[in-house]
Image (cartoon, rainbow, N blue to C red):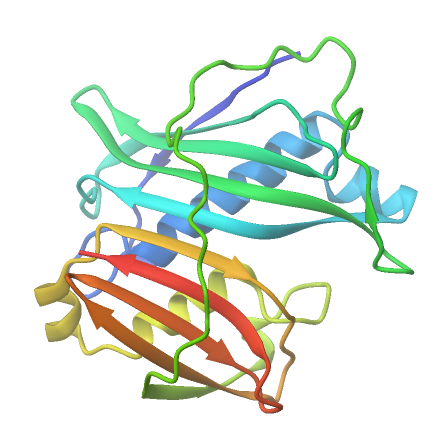
Length: 240
């Protein structure tokens, strides 16, 4: 039983942005996909959880970019879980090759009952005997993001069916892709965001229009995404 999952991954065109490099949202997608693959191997992925009436939800994600791999390069993507807490589980991610690390990430996951949507205890969720890796790619705790600012309206986005997952709400990575989309390619190139932290608060659904508000200071951009009712769906922080 492996406590860590590694996979060699080519950086294909579909993972790249205008710069022919791995995009921030694609890094998040690789992390989420690897988490699912590892959970499946451990018997606690979609297949095993679906039979038990459970599912995973990402509560928070943090990604740090050191450098972005270019199109046609091949990298290793790795993931491993940390020790499970009472109701939350952290999972670490790394993208690297023989020359060093490209990006790292950490996600806080929760387990939800499919019918009641009530959080379930995570303490004994991992298979007995699973070795827990000691390496922590982001040892710092998640930041305390607040949405108590008015901010400037940076854009809006209408959620399409391609943005939703099997839970019928907007997918975690789709939010990050939508955040990227509020900037022009020139703005993204100039800002060169190196770090993203995103907290998921309330689900949004197909057909809704979400609004992006932001405040920026000292190279840090704080965002809140509001649904049509004015409730906060997502809080995010981007650092250049």
